[in-house]
Image 1: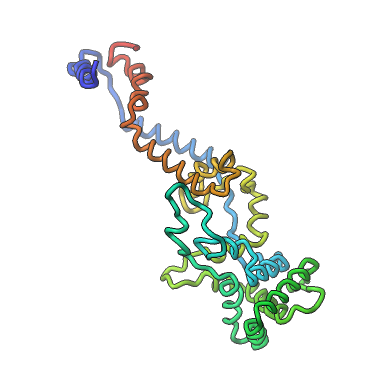
Image 2 (image 1 turned 135 degrees about the vertical axis):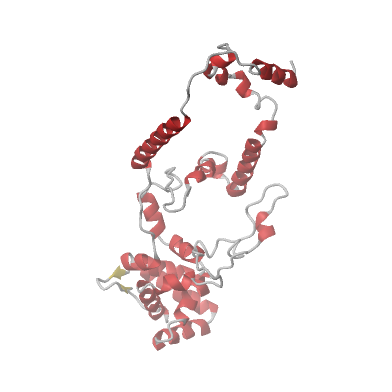
Length: 319
């Protein structure tokens, strides 16, 4: 029997209804359904809702862990941080890594969001502290030095930071010497961050609405603040956690479709995992859209005719 013949048979079955009738209050049913859904929503919200945590800020980070903040800022200064060596779309630190067959997204889009970690995270904010001549002199001394001299200062300072301690006032003490202008620079940057000024400096952009949080997030991600919070909330990649973003429905829940694949091979061990997952999700999404046109799959509802069981009085059969 062809599809057209089946449709004609179905239309003939309910063309002339000879069964019984009964009253039906659709408003009452809608109110009952709404009440049940509302009650279920409230119960599930209590059981599974995400905590409304306060957002992380550079100010909070610099106050709670000034040593980690200064250590991270020093790696930004010498380009040894994760962001400094990331590559596209932030810089040219490494060659293309994500590609699939003829698809080379990193080459096509290039460095679309350029970030110079030394300038953007350290030197430019320090130059904005025009009321602190000591800081300006230290920045000038650093920038006028040779690359070898800058590397000597930052390497020595990073070693000294491994034994650094924080004082009750929020400053840090770094033992040793030979750091050049770095102690003065980092003291100024730490004070700027603890006052909340660095958050605003990194958020500023040419856009009318200052909503690009890329730089603050990358700076904090290079340190230990975000990873510590993620571990506490079971959100690390090895923990399979997922937290809904409060105030922005649907938030992150939909991301499990992507993050799931990162937990299994070959995606979990491939350096090319990002574009592989993206391609796989593209194929699966296309398959979902094309379900009505895929032979066999589109006929599954006919194999399981629940509608005939539910409306058996109408169809006059329990087939």
